Length: 70
Image (cartoon, rainbow, N blue to C red; front, side, top):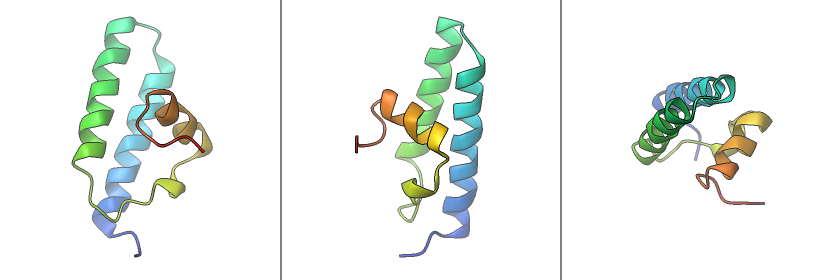
């Protein structure tokens, strides 16, 4: 199934949040951002294609146990 326009926007939002996560070293900020990413993923459109995430985002999401390991 092709990724919908909503899913593409949601993927971009998740990518931005992952970028914010990578830019901060503050523990509490990282916790807050990780929780926001969990929320975004849990409410994402079912057509969201996780293979379209950047490699850095995929690695970070795997580290957070939000994507299955390859």
